[in-house]
Amino acid sequence: MLVAFNHVHLRYGQDRPVLTDIHLSVAPGSFHFLTGPSGAGKSSLLRLIYGSERPSEGHVTLFGQDMARLHRSELPAMRRRLGIVFQDFRLIPHMTALENAALPLRLAGAEENQVRAHVAELLDWVGLGNRAQALPSELSGGEQQRVAIARAVINKPRLLLADEPTGNVDDESALKLLHLFLELNKMGTAVLLATHQQVLVDRLGKPELRLRQGRLISTTVAEAA
Ligand SMILES: Nc1ncnc2c1ncn2[C@@H]1O[C@H](COP(=O)(O)OP(=O)(O)O)[C@@H](O)[C@H]1O
Ligand SMILES: [Mg+2]
Image (cartoon, rainbow, N blue to C red):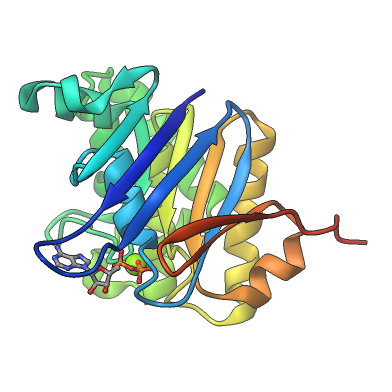
């Protein structure tokens, strides 16, 4: 399993628990939606996976590694094995779309000519081939989102976590973005995609992990016709 949650509880301070007794496994190559209304704990659950939050009780393993036993200094390397699309993009403002998307490859020490070719191809794939030299401030919300997606997948992660990746675009653009995630999934990347847009989930017919009052309810939606 890429991810396993065993008896996971999460509470912030003295508030009532956000997550209660969560069991979850994410298999290689799988695709799941993580749904629930705003405040249900979707982002918290994703943060537990990438180790920016620790469970109050229970265990989270990522790539077979118990996150509680991971030293803080080992966290960045672990995160580089994941693709993460943040809700607020987290693009670097003074870098172009191309430079932002290329960042993980450059950090990994890839050859510059390979970086250029690969990033250009990926920006084409997300439909931004002609915006490669634009700064984030010159891009629409949907375009910034696509740069963030390109950056998240450039290292070919085995697991992609996406937090409301379609939250800033209209339904039609959202469906286009979702098809990028589906294509990626077909090529073997496991995807866990948090969204509160039920209409999108219903359109795609992929399994849904639903958060309700802190608990995880699995629903398998019938395959779309
Ligand atoms: N760092 C934090 N400290 C305290 N409470 C938090 C923190 N992060 C989230 N919460 C609370 O936990 C609940 C779940 O939040 P979140 O995981 O962001 O839900 P979602 O992503 O589904 O909207 C909310 O009530 C939110 O206010
Ligand atoms: Mg959230």
